[in-house]
Image (spheres, rainbow, N blue to C red):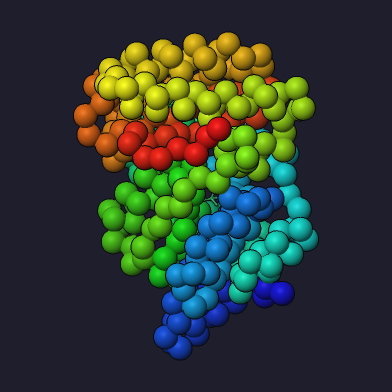
Length: 287
Ligand code: PAF
């Protein structure tokens, strides 16, 4: 079974001992309620390093008012078993007051890349993510940290932060893990009612439409966006937050697809707000 560290100092001491012994530490930060997508990040970490640490912490500072912080699904016992099965050495499992004790007042803001896409409807989200990841990196002291590409903007924000603040670790992005029918895995899929499940597929199928248009030579972002929006809007229970095509590094909207670009979308399907994305030119495994 994986060892559990609940205390920041205990985790820091363990990380320091590993480093002094010349071991490489890979780290997968999570909010728990693990699914196959998380487990694939852990398998990647297992391959890359001597020691694999994950964190399970539902981070309050990345949820805005009225979002699902209280209701976010949690099941530590199951998470502990799944993590142990894929060979996690240590689970860092702090509580909220040890991460944010009374008097806490320091936040990390990554400016421009946090603003577009999810930053529009979730204005404090990436400040919370950047802050908690900074704290976790200081506690776990990893040589590399592994993130899923499903949260594309999060990955860009974290890479930017690590570069800008000279943090001494490598950020690794891993491809999105999908259900057999194409739905990107997410802990929030557990909120979907059975009748909404089919509508949730409109996200990945919408990306496939974008890919097909691109592959046939379409480079006008507005044409692709309209086709994807119309397709998703044609499904019951969907409410589109955004469909955008952006430069993969700056995350600024592009009108013509020239450099490396991503089509990213966020759609409320019943209760959950789901996200997905596709980088043009890459393979996309959607039936
Ligand atoms: O992707 C997530 O689960 C979270 O945003 C993260 C990176 C664990 C920070 O709380």
